[in-house]
Image 1 (cartoon, rainbow, N blue to C red):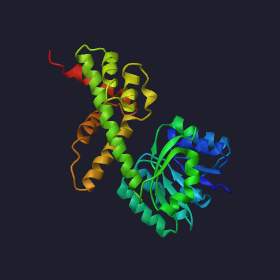
Image 2: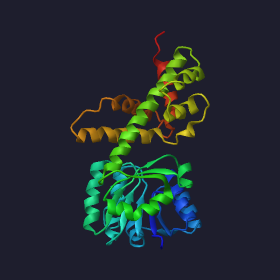
Image 3: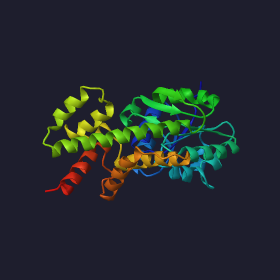
Length: 299
């Protein structure tokens, strides 16, 4: 079967890795400059075609993929005279691989449907390194027939490809997933900082905690920095963690319920942002807690 032409918007760390994977598998790739000129140039050097507007990119594609940072960014690229929706036609599919608000996703889905095309949310798990090898976890949602139609493409990008239900279900699950990850990472970061305060060796703390049921991948990611000095086992910036846990809190508000457990992690990351730590990786929240304890310790 002929492979669909792919229009890709958002060539950041994850998006550029996904684009590289698609090009390795001989997909026709259409791209547009978003923030990273270097990644666009690299894709073009590998044979991608660059377009100036999202509308033109959509008109030249069968499937449009977005991998951008916020719901506002998705909406900005989808709407307007030069947006993706203006370039859609019958039978096309748009996939949002980012982490967006489910309510925004459903609103855009209705607008895409009115243009004769189909919309899916398909947020991602794992890292850019996994993306290069086609080993992502993909949380697809939308009409099952649409999912089945694009699944061969998703299978080229992901090792574990799920269909989670109607439009918005993917983003809902991703926000719950990231809420849990960010609260655990923040708690483990504070645990290491508290160990410092109590003159307990970080490696010793990890050895004890990881020997029991608390052991997890997130614990290992934080330990990778706290003990081994490598912040990149979890290549996820503090600013993105704060955004996602904020979205989770908003989702809870939209459902009319309070999210108690997200508040501490959200507050800690908010303060970290005001201190200029936003571009640091989540495991570096260890430094945030250690510095806070050092500045507030009662003498």
